Image (tube, rainbow, N blue to C red; front, side, top):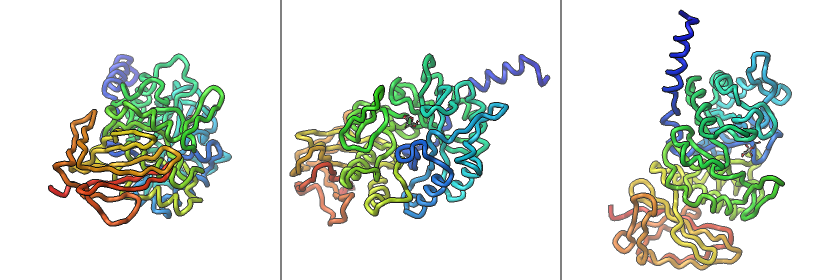
Length: 403
Ligand code: GLA
């Protein structure tokens, strides 16, 4: 009976038919830290442990950060049976011990693989080994998988990501699946039931508005990535997020650029994956990454991204609908000049272009809270007047006071 081919076929068919995405994960955008932006392939178990320690001691954990994710280059060889192992020199205690350490801090653990036969860094990929790798991750206690797209000539993205989704499901441990194919195959059109987040673009770079040319590919500054999100907000929501890539806060931009970058990621309901050295953060970097009121905009249960309401002379105004009829509003100064903002709320009727939200400031008055400065609260009866520095934001939470 055990080796009955018909029974095996039946079981296999059932598992393929019934495998699915783990529901109820990532109901708000995942928050955490990833090794890649700062450390690239220079990683080892001490780097990861220090990051986990710093996530707790800096207040990031209290602010909602949860996942410690090891990106590319943790891999060693496959063993004689084909099971993947961590690089023994850099991870001498083994991956299971590291996962246990991260869990002991009350955090979750994420790992990285690739749908091709090699990762982007040339390490063993999961192609043809999806079920075996998923079993290994489950055994180690992995909670999150970033699944990349290098060396995938001749395979189809939707199928490849579905295979890994099914493998994770069959392995039985709930895992957030982070799809990373750079938006090449429009994952927002097909990945809602496959992954919990999908990259929408190529890699980010720690600059305000540049293209960093790497020969046959480019990475992109914050404004470039922001502009590439155009048209995608209607595809995202609880459990399935657009991912404009990990953050570069604390990696060399100015404080106002970091603040604007973080604010816009919160407005986009983006996954908030820090990408800096958590062990060596300036007070400003910590203040930005742990701004709880700003994080509440990102994590708002409605899960609706902001839309661009107006743009003129390098000054943009963005609106994000929030739970209970609140709104987040951000003025973004992209330009190199100071901008005088004068916004008479009463003249504005704001209509969401993709979802059923609107507000009419002529008839509804909101309390106005500045999210980056503790100045006294105002309301929308009065015209907002402000000077906004170059490469900076003014970000507000509006609360309906007539309710
Ligand atoms: C790709 C991904 C990056 C990172 C590297 C690792 O470029 O887009 O985020 O994971 O691979 O090699």
